[in-house]
Each structure stands twice: as C-alpha cells, then as structure tokens.
Length: 262
Image 1 (cartoon, rainbow, N blue to C red):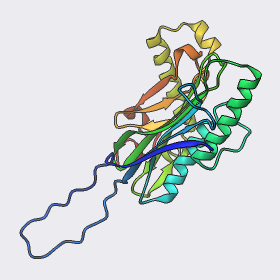
Image 2 (cartoon, rainbow, N blue to C red; image 1 turned 45 degrees about the horizontal axis):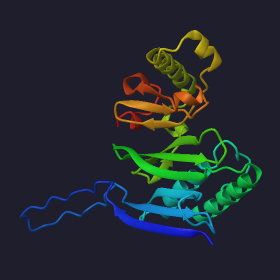
Image 3 (tube, one colour; image 1 turned 180 degrees about the vertical axis):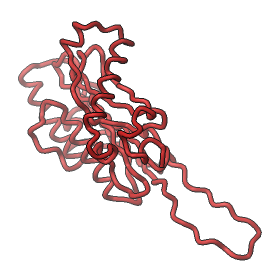
C-alpha cells in the first residue's frame, strides 16, 4: 500500500475585502468579497514496499478553493495532465493524486526492471499564485518528472487564469479580441526576437529553434508573459523561455479587462 503523509492548512494567499464601519445607525448591505479563499494541500507518496532513503516519491503541493469545488477540480485535472509530460500524451490522466502516484510507481518499477539503476524516480506537481490583480488570479502550475535512468527530468509549466468576478477559468481566446489572433502572434514574434537578442542568440539558433505559437499566457499588470516548455523553442539547457509583451502593445488586441483598462 502506498505510504502517504498529508498536511492541509488554510492559506491566506488571497487578501479578503475589509469592511469599514462608522458610527452610523443604519447599515449598508455587504457584498460578498470577490477574492477567492484558498487551502494549501501538501501530500507525499512513497513507493509501496520501499524502506529507507532511496525510494521513488511523488510530491503534491497544490491549492484548493473551499468556496468553489469546480475550480478545485479544474486545477487538479490540469496538474494531473501536466504531470504526464510529453511521453504519455495519448494516455488518460489520473483521476486523483493517489491514482497518479500509483501509476507513476508502476512505471518506476517497470523502468527499474528494464534498466537497473541506483537512481530513484521522482515526480512533483505544484500550484502557486503567480499574480493577483484586478480580480484576476493567475496561478502557475508546475510539474517535474524524472524516471530513473533518464539523463534529466522534465519540467513543464502551464498558467491557469481565474476571473474572480465570474469565478471561472479564462482561456487565451477569452482574453483576445475577436479576429486579433494574428496580431497577437505578430507581437509574440517581436517578443521572441527581443528574447533572442537578450540571450545573445544568432540567426543559426533561430533557424534551428523556430518560434511556435503559444497561448500559455499569464496576464500581469505591466506585461503578458508567454511561457514555453523545454524543447519548444530552445534546447533543454536554455530552460523554459518566457516571452513578454507590454500591456500597452496589446491595446486593440486584447480585451480591456485583461490589460487593466476596465
């Protein structure tokens, strides 16, 4: 049986609204605060039957929304899918943290039989608050998966944007004005050229690692971040490139709601 340790604590990541009261006899009706409360979820799974320090492990550091079970479920589903990496794209994602751990340990055991190694497999699934502004909650979802015998582990990142006014996940197409996809891609190309110049990359690098479109967007107050995973537009050693587009350049391309203009 999988050995599990679990810790749950109330998070104070989101600031709740503060109600000011005076000495008036009449009271104004209070509106429900927009900011979503969160719970921090920490779990660790250890390969069944393994004792000591050299055991395959799965670590979960996620978030839950006690006021919205649907958002909690969406976050979990996205993290579990991200944790499959690029090697299991055709497989169905797990339905729970424990199911993910069980599948991961089965793969680890199979890998140890085929290529015995002193290394141990490990996986990490993590959700953190990347930004919070204008009733937008931007989460950064990260996974890191390493199977014993591999040259290196695989990190992956995806953004999850929540509109607190609607309590709904916002996709890239929700943030762009209709018909402005090509204009956004042109801005992304400019951002890629700035990134390559800052990195000191030459034309040969750009030919070998061309830009691919991405909608992995984090709408921040000053700029939009577009995150790429390893091997998307650069070799593993470069890491996960982040391209930035200033919000002023997105005027007429993005909906005002997502560039601080509404």
